[in-house]
Length: 322
Picture 1 (spheres, rainbow, N blue to C red):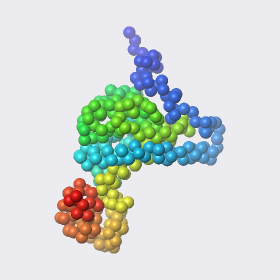
Picture 2: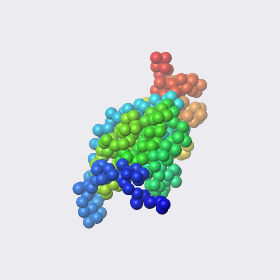
Picture 3: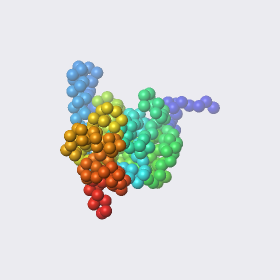
Picture 4: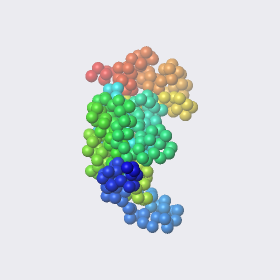
């Protein structure tokens, strides 16, 4: 018997059949009346239409702030307890997740294992499309299983439609293994909401180019991931005031940033900042605690160890006893 192609299979038998049936009803896939006749517009008109639609993104994200706050605290607890944040995505959502994951180590000196991502098609899909894998919940389950999720971890599925089988399969598997789970989507009442413990919804509406969710939906997802990791790292004490005190000085730009952080926070001149950084073993958190608490390197290290790296707590040692 000949094997039918995906296009030849009846809708109920196709992988991700529910996704295909409902694509025409979800807001991120419907036509946008604001961009009708888009292909007849001038370059300036095109830019104005896109800009007008983009202006709606922040308002959509604002409505999801309570759920974003839950995600921030959940991620912070997981990382504090030795767990991991693992994003799961496909296509644009996967690429955005990989970007947020890869920027945490240089910004906050996290280890690569603390904030991770998996995406349909693997790392090669970052540069080239691997759309077929999106339709397989089994591949999603297989990929997350390789990370061995535990109750210490939080797995966040990122899917603009909320119906990507790969992402749903991975989140469902992780939750069954005891991991905390969340979803980020741009549509209400989606299948991923049924498998995740809580869902962050930024309903941005139809895209200028129908279904091109790398646009408003992608922008919303990037904003939300920025909030989650920035908020979690701040809750962990890797930010002091509004400065990245946990920055790892791996290049000239970051060295200069570290010097300026010390000068700003501690009110010292450049020479004192450089001298303190050297005596702190090029660690900005240690240098900040040394100057702010007026202690030597050994005491600063002790305090930071006791506070799990929280710089503010390490400076005010009395709070560690509470």
